Each structure stands twice: as structure tokens, then as C-alpha cells.
Length: 334
Image (cartoon, rainbow, N blue to C red):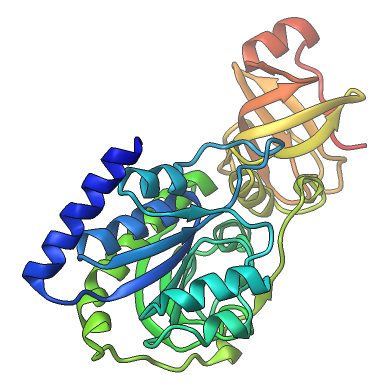
């Protein structure tokens, strides 16, 4: 955006402020799609966003989500991207703005006490679970891994301990049996937008009610690494299916070995008791095979239909695998 366009945008907002009266002000820490949609909600409600703090994109990360920085620039809002948001320089800049609120929308760094004490009406975070469940990192992925049938978004006040402040608003969404993390995350993004949009008028007016969390009803979960996607084939078909969909692209994917080659399982379905049956003992080693143009995996308990997979870095259909390797059973895992 050109400087004159930013000035014009700011002039429009100032003119609106003089007509509508004083507006609540906020500093917004945000990233990812939840950050984009929740920042959009604040702007739609006329909040004066004085500063946006976001992250630089990591070149080693697949960037499949929208840009908070681009949205802020579009609206003429100053943007900073500090490596550490808690430095004295950043704290001093935000303190000078005297915001009514600080909001954190999928920002990846913890905000310390010096920042949290600045806003006159509180600092709030949007978390991607139904707190107090799945406090901490990557809550959508963990909810799927644990076989949850619903999750959602929670707006809560921030403290120095992650995700344990009083709850202002929640919105639930379903997790269907074959939903991937990407599909659930898209639902959670909408849930976050709905939760914030519904409570924001009361929040800005100072009449929003907050409910204390019962932390005994949930637990804290840490981040996940690519190697956490290695499949343990001794587990049940349902547990492995949950892992596959929790780490499916754009995440790194569930990984194993087949014929000494790396294999990435991209999509699965839990097979019923008759589907794909090849008579095998319950104690048989986990194995991969193709039957009637469909690929299957024998698990510690039960059978998986392997809908999509890569072998040695190349995606391959069940038909192509059968044409090249035949109908034999191939041991899975290292």
C-alpha cells in the first residue's frame, strides 16, 4: 500500500471516529488464518487497532495460510515482526499506545506480565480448543489424535500461565470420523470468528462475563515434531487412522517403511470386518497389500484401508502398486 493510500485510510477511520465517538483501541498479536479472521472481526466492529504484531514466515515451513501482515497493511495499520515480543523496546512501544485491549490470535509466543498489565480492559487470547481441554500447542492435532468428536475455539483472559485464564466465549464444532486436521482447523477458524463476533459488543462495553476454568477437566499438551508422525503398527487401526488424519498434509504426514523404502500414509479409512479381508492371525506382523484395486494395512488390531500413500517420495495408486509389486503381503515398519 502506498503512503498516500495509508493516509487516506487513516483519514477515513478518523472521520468515522469523530462521528461515532471514541472507539476502543487494541494492540493485536496475530498470525495464521485465525489471526486474519479475528482481526477482521475487530475491524468490522470499529475497534481502533493501533498496532499489529505478527511473525515473519519461516522459509522451512509450508505456508498454506493467509497473511495477517497483508491484512493490516491493507487497512493502514502499523506492523512489527519482532523475534521476541517481550523486549523492553516492544513493551515500551505498546505501553505508549495505551490500548484498552491486547488480543492474541494464534500468535506463537507467550506474552509476559509486562505486556499483559498494559491494557486497561485486559489481555485476551483465542485458543483452538474447548478449554480447559487441550491447553498448550497444536490443540486441533491433539484432539484428532485422541479421537475427540468435537472441539472448538475459546476466547479467554491471558495470564502468565498458558491457556488457563477466565473464559469469555466458546464455540464448538464437530470432528467427523474421517476429518483431517486441515478440515477441522478450517472449522475452528470459523468458530473463533463466531465466538469473538458474538461477545465483542459486550466486551467493548465492559459488561462481558467471564467464567473461571476448572483445570482438572483438561490437560496441557506440547508441540509436535515431524518424527512424532512415525506409525506404530502395533496400535489399533482406529488409533493409526487418528494419527494419519491428524498429521495429513499440509502437515508432514504419517510415516513408515515398506520394502526398505520410506512410505508416507496420506489418507486412510478404518475398514469394516469384511472389507479387504485376507485371513490372518491376530498376532501376524503388520503388513501392506492390495486386493481388488484397494490397498490395506494389517494393524495390531483391525484393518485399515490405505486410500492415498507415497512410496519413496512418489504418490502411487493401489493399481500401480499391484502392477509393480503384485498381491503379496509386505511387512510394514522398520
